Image 1 (cartoon, rainbow, N blue to C red):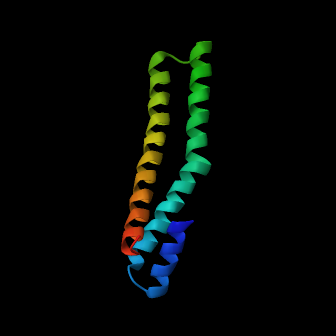
Image 2: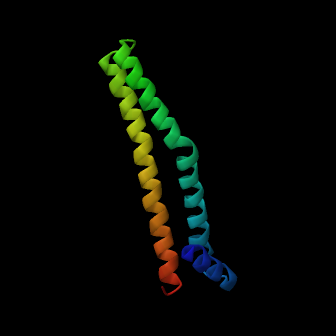
Length: 96
């Protein structure tokens, strides 16, 4: 992975540790979304669809569940943008 190699070089030089730290933090956030939050959003959506089709919940509850699932997905996309920006910053600092 090129970005981790660039980050390692920056860490060894001791320059811009905040950028390296921010990238690591953002990668951890991204992993949380990929391993936990996105599967939860999928489950929430699936359960909401089943309950709505069965008549167990009304349209309002169904729409609220869709909103929560979409909020999780938007959070993931925000985390992805933040991570990509941090990697681009590191690569720029490393001269790539």
